[in-house]
Length: 63
Image (cartoon, rainbow, N blue to C red; front, side, top):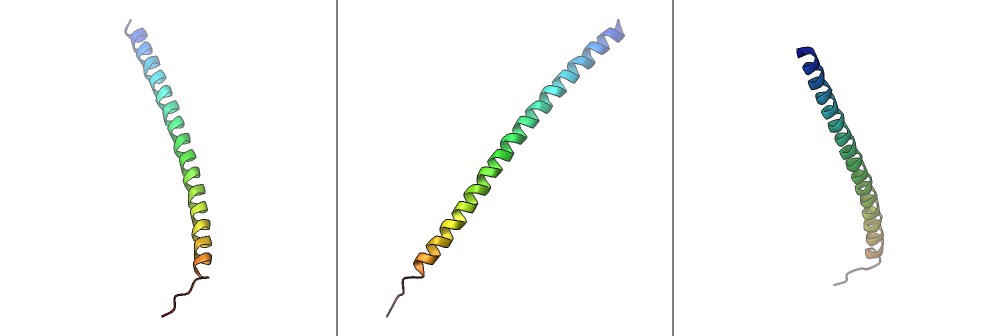
C-alpha cells in the first residue's frame, strides 16, 4: 500500500516537474524573441543616429 502511494506521489511530482520545465521553456523562448527584437531595434536606432549625424554635418554655425 505504501509503495503504491509513493509511486503515485512520484508520478505527481514528475508531472509537475514536466509542466514547470515546459513553462520555463516557453518563457525562455519569449525572452529570446524579445532579445532579438531589442537587438533589431538597437541596430535600427544606430542607423538612424548615423544618418542624423551625417545630416547635421551639413549645417554649420557661424558667428
